[in-house]
Amino acid sequence: MIYSRIIGTGGYLPENVVTNHDLEKIVDTSDEWIRERTGIEKRHIAVDGETTCDLAEQAARRAIEAAGKSPEHIDLIVLATTTPDQVFPSTACLLQSRLGIHGCAAFDVQAVCTGFVYAMGVADNFIKAGSAKCALVIGAETFSRLLNWEDRTTCVLFGDGAGAVVLEASEEPGILSTHLHADGDYASLLQVADGVSNGYDKVRDNAAFVEMRGNEVFKMAVNTLGRIVDETLEKNNLQKTDIDWLIPHQANIRIIKATARKLRMSMDNVVVTVHEHGNTSAASVPLAFDVAVREGKIKRGETLLMEAFGGGFTWGSVLVKY
Image 1 (cartoon, rainbow, N blue to C red):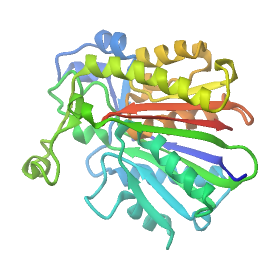
Image 2 (image 1 turned 45 degrees about the horizontal axis):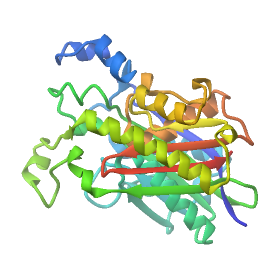
Image 3 (image 1 turned 90 degrees about the vertical axis):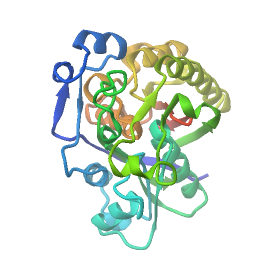
């Protein structure tokens, strides 16, 4: 049996840091309010001229280096983003050119905060089918470009960044299963309502912003992530105690703690970066994963559960033997 094995990780955050105290100066909020409700203390925000592809390139190069590979080894690029540099070509194609890679498939995946989990599922199936042997999977966002900085309910939550992994075909266990879901009936609860085919003037004038009904999203996220945990464990005939690390989407510390309780897992075995990164959407899970790997927390042979929930609604999980 062929598995997709993670052989390298990489992450990148813009140098520009915005703290809760910085936000107090521009919107009616407070450091205490943000910390209590979200766990966020600061976030990294891309400066003018710094694009999603810029962030993705840095994370990708670090992942490729960590994998002991060079760009010419890559034969598939799947990039998850909600904030592409251009309508087209895809940000994956722009990244492909920057890395000096030619000829292999390269495309974007859009599932908002679940984007990286979706991208991992896609790449895993390419490798299992024999269509790729060495895949670069990235989650990258300049999500701050979608924020209304006068809306205190959303602008305090998000940040920018990129995370990446290199997957290689292997007979050693790697990705054990992926579980991807969506339900478009809930679109209005978390959305950017305007796009190229609907409200182009707003997009052109940079007036297309995130709209979120926070309490309803919170309840759905907690319940849905609980179900995806059960589904993943049942599919693999595992017990909750078999999971060594939970790598959750970094949206809100209360959602993260609720998912950990579902697994009966100590927070010592949960990777948490939301306090330093905020919600970086598709970059959230790979950034947290890279931090934990580089800090030496996650070790080879351990069983990892990645999970995420995002606009759509979309949700999913990846079970990995690292």
